[in-house]
Image (cartoon, rainbow, N blue to C red; front, top):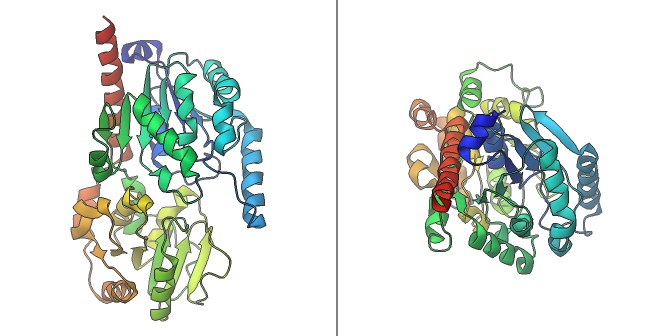
Length: 398
């Protein structure tokens, strides 16, 4: 936790982060989790769990009940110091239009009170979830940062009539916008006042050690699966994942074991193949061992606007583990194409996997490239920009 002299020197005494995920239930690899945990070693951080961009639909009662129950359990935790200097808060709120209406008279007071309780009175207000847009008008701050690492307006369950104006509001009011995808940053260069490119990082030692065999034995739920094994690690969601491609490829490669590690929001029975094994969500600390247990790692992304605007965290983790990677194309892949195999369409994707299984692979060049992409380095870059931003403000006032 930062001492008083550090807080005064930087022009802010902490960070309030309106997160895009829920700390208690989402994978800890997300950008805002990784950056805020590291900044919390030097500055108090109040991480506000995702406010939500939509109300869960009633069409799938199982999913609806799961999401509502999860949110209620998160709310019951209140304000918790999850790690030294890193405080997690779950305010009472609601998704969609109601949340926007609640922001000034109900949501903002909760957040201000939580911040005061941990000693933050002049914060950087960092907003990832668009539902927090109007908080720029009700939470005084030393500076407003918009985290633009996801194109939320392309989220299929979001109401574009709500999310679109929220994003426009954030662009207009943010003192700094942080991007992970270079092409999206360039696309919006004229829309914002100040930009910073921070591509996703990687916990290099965790993933490289797993790939070297330095971790524990293979996870028990995959250890008995026959090889070759083809792994996908991540959420199986319609706005990112291409289920039609995956089903055709798995059917074509019936002699291989396909392993899916992560949650799934698609309907039951979407994948009929017996060589596909769903092992569910795993703790972040265990993910690397699942990657290392594979012979090939895949990213069967679709071509949605979400994918076009993102910079998938899994790419650098896959490379650090040191297994061949087969992926569909996406814009942020540009500087990494020489380290992976890019394939479009089921036939080309299946052929690329078969070649990877039958060929030789040298992980050294890839590991050399991602070794300097640590989350610690990314957090240092962010902190330097926050200090520069608040110092600029101080000079302008003087």
